[in-house]
Image 1 (cartoon, helix red, strand yellow):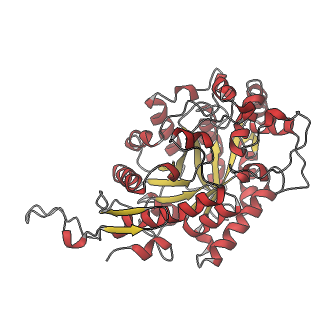
Image 2: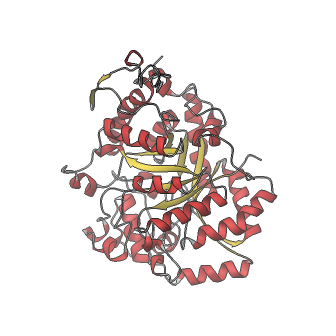
Image 3: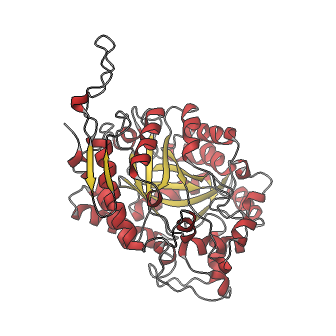
Length: 453
């Protein structure tokens, strides 16, 4: 069996995927403004040989529940939320191998400036930077940027395709290899003959510029994508190296994996080159009884209203208008379409009520919750990887850092004993560690058509 990959799923906010559990006496997510929390967490993850920390982000406030941001603010439903990129240099300085997959919304920032910020971080991390490409899903974000509403769902991906063409030209086409020799003897820092101005004019973007950064270790950071709608999967199959999906069951997740790999193959890529991670939350202990006791303890702090406010934000559906015993039905919106589909149309034989949805989302969000002793958890993760075709998991927390510390101490050794998890890191950049074939994008990725020289 192939090696299981692991990311920690975090966010520069309170609670993240387990609304209400910030109030648990051992939870430290309210310390998100303390840099020491983040550096200690990074060191814990590196001790557990995690591939990376995947930092979510959202622009805007979840104001779709009862037509107001009140529930989100009252319960700290991913607000307040700080900039995730600012955390990376400190965590990188505290570690040697851990990768950083950071969510940046392309809808509200010109490619010229975002390309520089990501190149800067790739330099500072010595090639451990990844970008989770998202287009956003909240009208409140658009309004905060002076727009009435966000573009329609599929239109956002049309914009994203053009955005990526610009980013690839800046990263791959502006500075050739060897263009910055740093030659003290000749007094030549950079060779103008090997540095090219990018001229691009499309429907959405116009750029006439030289990329501001010399080539970073990876040039283009590792490319993540986290949209699982049909249009999102089309985009991922064309651009992504790693894809983050969600689903409450192997049936839902396996169907998404199969579709992503088919789309990649149809586009001329090796389907195995797409590393696919799914969301999961683990509660474990030194025995099954201890794990169940933790779960019961955590449940006392779970907040169903906060969970519905969170899910309303993801889906664009106001769940305050529904009774708890109402059955879920798929509704087309301009928000994250896959969120509601995974609980409805993706598995029509499983009928969820609003009450069951709230209980599920309250600990771990949209993914499955695994509770058990370390050996049980290890077998469950192996089974999911085998049955769905995923490559790994984005592990959310119930209580932080406890959930991550328990996993590193108890579950990682069980996975290693079964031969499905690395004993140590490979050398090189984030891309080297994930794919083992050098720091740069490899054929037939579309970025390479723009590579200078």
